[in-house]
Image 1 (tube, rainbow, N blue to C red):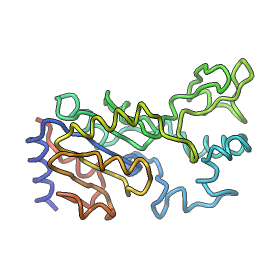
Image 2: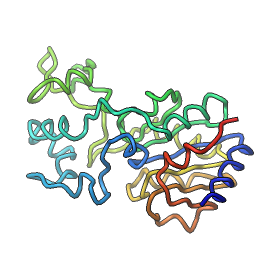
Image 3: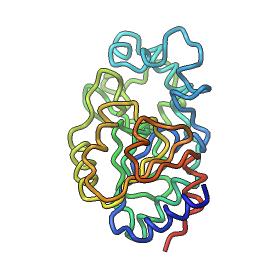
Image 4: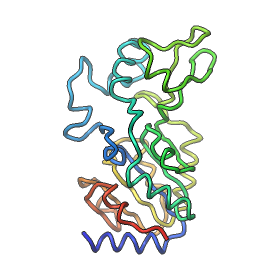
Length: 241
């Protein structure tokens, strides 16, 4: 494994345009639960399955139940960036990293200092009135009870992509543009099971593909380098120069 870390370091040193594509595993080391691990949200017990609660149909039909779950399980506002978030921000600051493409909605990449972040599934930090589009802070959502309402009477909805909703086209276009321009793609903390987001890696045309995940993924055989360790543990060993 030490040899693999040395190879990753050399490739990062040699690269001019890196893109990082990350999933829930990037944030689990910050204490945010993922959805598909043994102790993830999908394996806990609720009146409805989490994937049903986090659907647009459920939001429209049972907003009170949606927000009860959402406040309890999705708003981890005290979470702090870990070694992976911090290292990626450092790589961007020195001009190595072009952008981060993330499936996460927690905003930890920006909290660590990353500037160019494509949030495929939106962010808990943006919330808007469905009637007048006035913004509402995540703190107001977290500290409130019931269904949050705007002064105009409209319902507040988080700017997150629920099941049954499509991804934002401008965000997708930005991510695809950066992936096509990259010479090194590092994928970390994702099982690559969620589409269409996972399909974005097919736009990569660069020389080297690296996969870093605690468990094997269906794409490991396509990678030039696969490392089965937590992403923070791996990137924490990388020197930025």
